[in-house]
Image 1 (cartoon, rainbow, N blue to C red):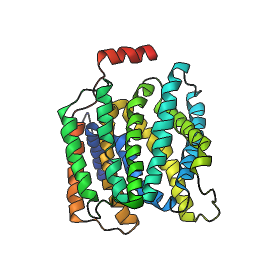
Image 2: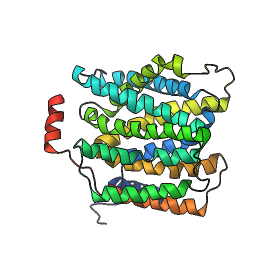
Image 3: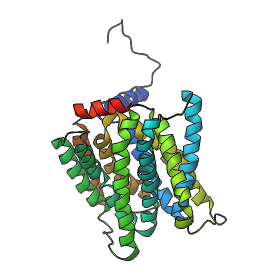
Amino acid sequence: MTEAEPREENTPTSTYQLTSLRRAIGRRFSLPALIAVLIWGVNVSTMKMTVAEIDPYLVGILRMGVAGLILLAVVWRVEGGMGIESHHWPRLLFVSCVGTGLSSTLWAVGLSLGTATNAALISNISPVFALIMAVALGQEKLLKERVIGSAVALAGVALVVQTDGLELRGSALLGDVFLLGNAVAWASYNVFGVALLKRYSPMRVTAWAMTLGAIALALASPLLVRNWDLSQVSYVGWGGLFYAVVFASMIAQTLWSRAMHALGASGVMVYNYLNPVLGVGFASLLLGERFTLMQAVGAVFVLGGVTVSTQAGPKRARPRLREREASEA
């Protein structure tokens, strides 16, 4: 290092190394997506405790309603407005009702009926659906890196959750049906939400998607919610709901939308494969569940698959799709 460019002596070595590591990770991976899945990894354990005390449908309404309204207020304050152009409302309503409202509810109900193992494996089929949708709609090309990386990561997910085995009977089977529906709905959010992010900020899209999703669930609540009683909910249950609102919804969802805009639907969805790895890891730390050698091997497969998939980089839409999206905007 030359005298013209002296190193700052007051900068601790550990801080300098952490900054270099963060930049290296940022060049290879999407930090917003990584932070989002890290938050959601903790959410698996907290939500499992919350839905044991609060009706899963009611959890979905409260979670999205509170988070959506707070985010709308923040958007209005920060961006000076929160409007959506009229020709974008059909897409926004679909993304909100199906990709947010229906998706989160199906996940909560599936988790309450089935096992965490089934939830981890079935929910992570979502990137496969997203890739199929994106290719079918002409948003992205079918790249071998994405296919190979997804296959390796999905194999790793199977190893991570194999310890307890899949339960395919009784209420667990019904829960699996709900979880499969969640995988399709969440994939649709990522595929159809990309066009909105070309026109509006990630926070505005997230705020409206959650608010409208909560309204849709609230309208159906007389048929869906079986238990409205919140008087017996413990501090643990309320704490899990608070985490879901502030961290898993407001922060993680906004970061995820930002990553969607940068990487496209299938590009960001590969990070979904990290969810079960983080979920099992945090369950081991927070709930005392065991973490086996086979799960560690599966985690390596998942990380390898995600790394291979991210090497493809964000891909542009085909020309005819770009022209159509430009005319819509």
